[in-house]
Length: 172
Length: 149
Image 1: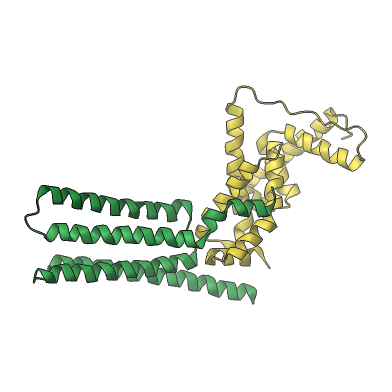
Image 2 (image 1 turned 90 degrees about the vertical axis):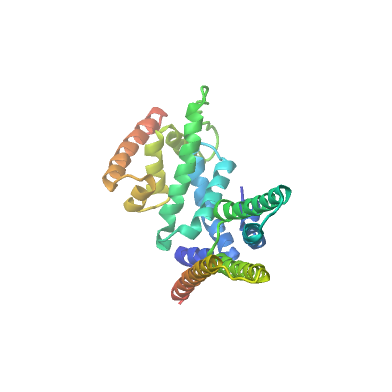
């Protein structure tokens, strides 16, 4: 069943459809929040789903559900980041701890650590474009910037990520 | 957090019974305060204590109506099916107000033209609202059929 059909069924008031929508998109939402904040945050995830539920009746373009969902997620994450930056003693981001784990796990952890070290704007375009496989126009809609800005942020994000990984001792 | 945990936390706003309850509460409050207001306006020579009692009752009714309105816009939004239910509730509230208003008016052996005007305006509003809700739902049902096709 397509996302568009699920959204239409949700808008009609079918509770089963909403449960299906949550099951389908929850992992992506949780992953996005986790990567953007550098940790899991159930409150933000919950806040996002509540906003989705409240906003669904007013969603006009059912075929644009994905960018709409990530725009909501982005707003919730940015609010949380703003709160975190406002606090005087923000916790530093830890370096990757990896000793005798399997290489794949180490690499994934290293990547997650490097991502966490990027500025929020660059991190989010990398996550949306590469990890969530969203097209450029959807990324632009989510971030509320022109497509050209997304491209330049992607360029800068790739460069920063490369520098960060090299700094951590990985080959560029 | 699992999807089931998310859904469990959203249980209250997702409940259809709650949304219908908020609607019923809102419309009951609105109709009640409108009828009491009508009684108050058409009853000559009321003592101050009775006037205060009427004012309190009207305020209580409006309070419930405001709460119902807030709940269905902020706490538990209305989906297409709920909007149709809300439309019928609106028609029901209009009918109750019309019957009540005419009974009150006829008991005094005169039909106020102003009351007639209010009844007509409210009736048109209720009908337009119900029609819009039914059309919106029909559009979504058609889209669902096309997509499921």
